[in-house]
Picture 1 (cartoon, helix red, strand yellow):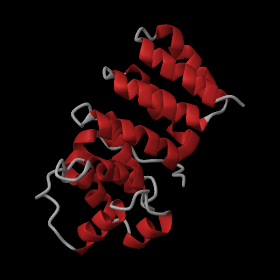
Picture 2 (cartoon, one colour):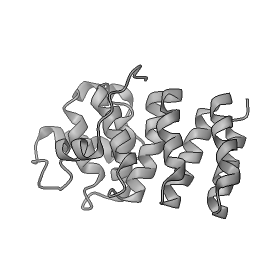
Picture 3 (cartoon, one colour):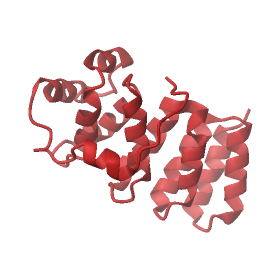
Length: 182
């Protein structure tokens, strides 16, 4: 699924529009249905999320950061945002990735989901996070870029490799290059 021209939203705007505490998203049929889909061992198919409509975006964003929700379901909530047919889903993923105040696991999962959602259109956003202060984010971004593949991705990863000092991030960059092989 691709969005030709994703609208840029600041992390503060998305954070303000997407409640992140359990009580901020009132219990209701949409939250209950989302939790049911997230309880499945794999991310539910695109058709299941599409059926719930764009109103599911803030619910998924809130569930992703609700620490009372099991970790696996929280991560599936982030991944599900890549499957929701609504422009604000891509914007929410981008804001999750770019917000240094969000948990690292959410940001890392957002990197992968953003790549799935936007494809090569995510390269610029992901590339900027290769300089993130959190090494887990740099690792996740290198892997997400590698899964996208292509010459542009190879150039981005090759450019970053000599600048990276942390061995585990260097390894992730190398893995990304291996994945990006034509």
